Length: 433
Image 1 (tube, rainbow, N blue to C red):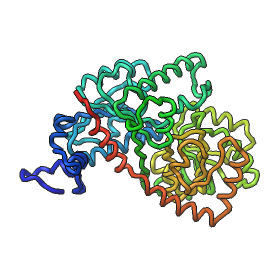
Image 2 (image 1 turned 180 degrees about the vertical axis):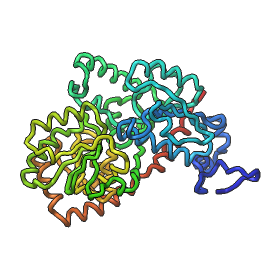
Image 3 (image 1 turned 180 degrees about the horizontal axis):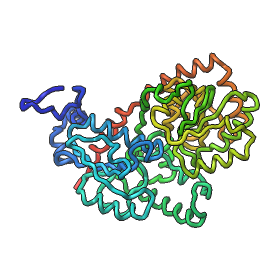
Image 4 (image 1 turned 30 degrees about the vertical axis):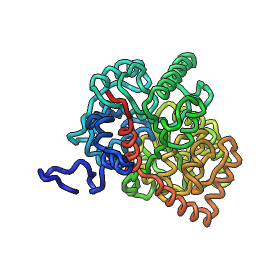
């Protein structure tokens, strides 16, 4: 790393010796023939104080993809940004899991849960008290009372694209209808008042433009997510070679895998019904669901009890560690994602990284993100799901081609690049004050 004369690291470079994000941003002015120092003084008046709503930090607190997104954003911003100061708002459950200990990073504990009335007013007060230049919200649940300028990441518009359904909640339908209306109001307020909007796919950007045509296209930035290295796959393997699926429940290959939550748009009930037909053709194959234990998975288990599948052929790996999840990916015969809508789709990319063929719904962003490395089916067509399962299981040349294409596809995605491009969005926000 280049050194200053006083022995401190040059803040214009990151730890690899490459120009820092701030220096890269200023270089735009040089190439355009402008004085970058004037541009910096005009727009930034020095370094930025940036807040991040990190309450969902970590896949075990944030419930999967959102938690992973926040975790990787914080980790890589700490590595690449040597200039700006950050304040992370974390919950008691994850404040000690967040290893950010740099002098530029301050952790603030807030015991305010998302999607609550306290979030709308108490959290806004706490955040505004920090006198930040900007706050990044990784989800649409921005407090209505917030006065600080903010950037938001919109992963999808399921609230607007999926029809209202009482199955999307564990609450009384009337109470959920009130909450649903509140959600939509907060979402609309967030999109219309954000200084800049980040989306994780072109699909989500187009959805925003469809529902909010008044939002200028240049205000919406598509920044793809990355693919996480989950660690040593052997740590999730039992002494007998079986894969530990949680609470020491083993499953023996071959098996199909599906990772994520069990919300209605994930369409897991349709996958269960498809697997019930597939099982009659291939009774030695199992199906594994991995995700966070909640009432939606309990509902799925009740659905399973009504379907003609032996209990030892469907497994639930609840709250798996990264090591167990890695092992589950590595030994799977096929990864399945039957969602009716996805804004990005981290788990199928994680499966591709592990050399596992992926079969996916052709809805939402999945064809954009997975490209020709996956095979596709209609999430509404049970027979097509069964045909695709059998095709990928039995066609060895197809499997080999899918594995090779999948491992090339994941190279398109990088958490470090995601953090760099996100930092560019922060630095481009004008009108701080």
